[in-house]
Amino acid sequence: MSFEPLDFEPIKNDERSVLSTDTELAILKLFDTAINSSSSSDIDEKAKRFVTNLVAFASEKKSGIDQDDDAVSATWEVLINAASCIPYRHYGQDILVKIVSLLGAAGDQWKDYPGFGIAMRENWNRNEWLSVNSSFVRLGDRSLSFGLWELRDGLECVKAERKPAPEAVIDTRILVATEWIIHGGRVLLRESLLNGLSSERTSGNPLGAGPLFAGARGFNFERWGFWKSRFGELRKTAVESWQKPIDEAVEKMTALEVELLMPGV
Image 1: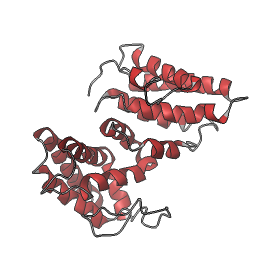
Image 2: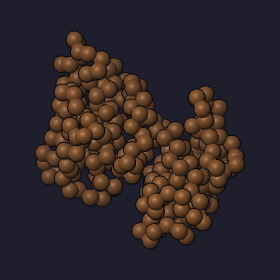
Image 3: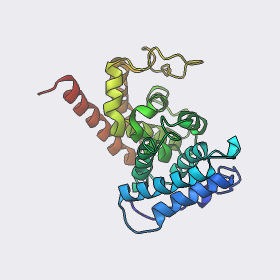
């Protein structure tokens, strides 16, 4: 895990206009201050500091503001875009997850995370796949459908015998899939055993299988087994630096299977 200072300048008024409203920039400043103002690596303390200051700020902004300047929706935009600036396996990812957890108990304004799912969907197809996924995979049940999308893209749409996309893109998709297993495997296996999301009503087929998997949509144990076998196939063509995470993911899947399917063994 790394602890170097973080730079959020790339998402301030850049050519993509990622964060541009006064409210978004004010919330980003609160986040930047909470993370970078001290050399401490205390995750709980920094998350609590941000949430305390954010709730006070949001309370001041709550009355008489435009919908486009809403503090809650602005917070989701800030946190999701800030995730793109946090390097892979930096402790800032754990701070983000702790912040989301604390906000769920921060009062009615934040209860049930209003608008969070919409913001995640709107920002999901990002160039910064690995940083964003590595942060939000730790949210468990709140990010299940996003995990399914990434496992499908990484394991069900990539052929081991050839590379239809640039190598760096393919390898990143595989690594993103390992992150979902390593950090969210318990929830994913539980849902696979329960056939989670298999009957979820959605437009189109976002929970359906990729071209390499002929099984049912949603989570199921057959699909879980397919993912595990695909890791083995894809390891053969993955760059050397990605082989260790793939091994870690397969070991995690095996350990979870023993724990949840064969308790006491």
